[in-house]
Length: 151
Image (cartoon, rainbow, N blue to C red; front, side, top):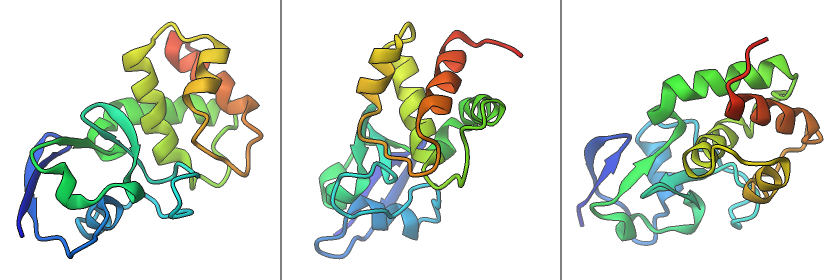
């Protein structure tokens, strides 16, 4: 079966195996920013945007995304660089394993609620787990990114 979908604004066609999840399809296509974590929809490191909404890519079958738009961090390169700058300046990047999915989530938050408060940020990112930072530096970086503060 052939499944065509929009990946980072480019139409792609794939031939997924029965039961193949989008995470595996994206990794096969060379997108290494989409990480494998828990495979149980609870860590957030496989997060992608599907039709503009955050979705754990380990939870959706590739055959279900026909003709839909998928965005990974590779599709928001300029914004991801800005987010990385703020994370770096706040010391919020630590090991970096969760950064691509978190950057995508932060980008999504800015699209949906650019005036987000700290509580809004915490609520929106509840599914993105990080084991290194303790979140405070991430929250500071995200607040600065949303306000586009300079140093």
